[in-house]
Image 1 (tube, rainbow, N blue to C red):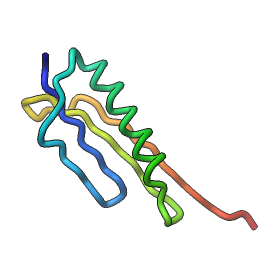
Image 2: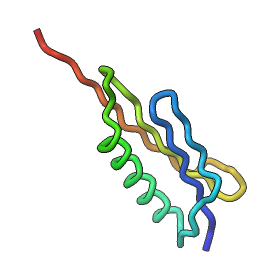
Image 3: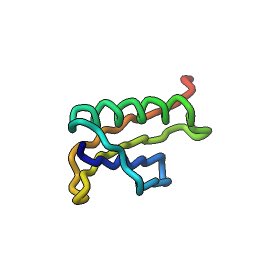
Image 4: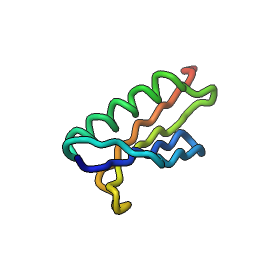
Length: 78
């Protein structure tokens, strides 16, 4: 099975996946990345007014295959 790396970006914090996941295909890697993005946003809602959560998928050669982002914005209305 191919090796895929899922990197996460939480505001200014970047976590580069060093271990990777053996997954059947890029579609499965995408599903895992989207699930990771959803979990990040649910677990780490910011104290500030906004935050950008991102994930990216790389192959074993380091080529970027997929990326997704989710923006959180929080505002009081007058």
